[in-house]
Image 1 (cartoon, rainbow, N blue to C red):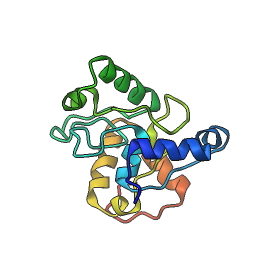
Image 2 (image 1 turned 45 degrees about the vertical axis):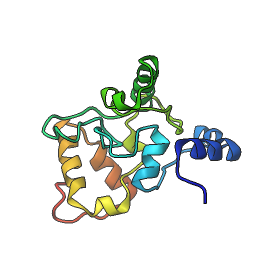
Image 3 (image 1 turned 30 degrees about the vertical axis):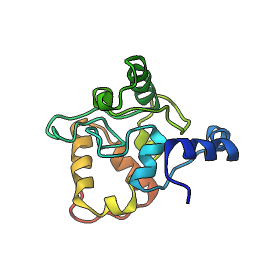
Image 4 (image 1 turned 90 degrees about the vertical axis):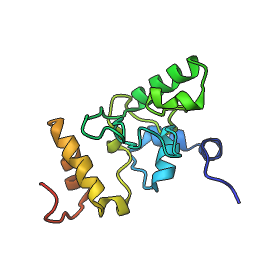
Length: 158
């Protein structure tokens, strides 16, 4: 059985030339949480910065994080590698340990390319994330929900 890892996913992307396809068309990835973290190059095994869409510290949820972008992940990965690439120090670099496999505008929030998995949309943890996004005075999450045709429940603040 082939394990879900960054190396195997990267090999699959290269074999199927998926990065060139991503570069010429509009796309959205639908994946489970582990694969999302692998696609982004973010440590997926109980990281301190647990959110693929922002860099909030999971132990300090009251302090808002910044949106993750391809650029921010790449910069943190490069800094982590320059510091020696010690996996125990990855938390100091937002748990970014590999270059993202997705292609897109480097400044665009990851949420525009990879939506939350369906299960997480049904759990209240997503409400917390959306509340945090609202603190940023942005409509990125609301716009994505409307554009994607997702039906919302009364617990969502729309």
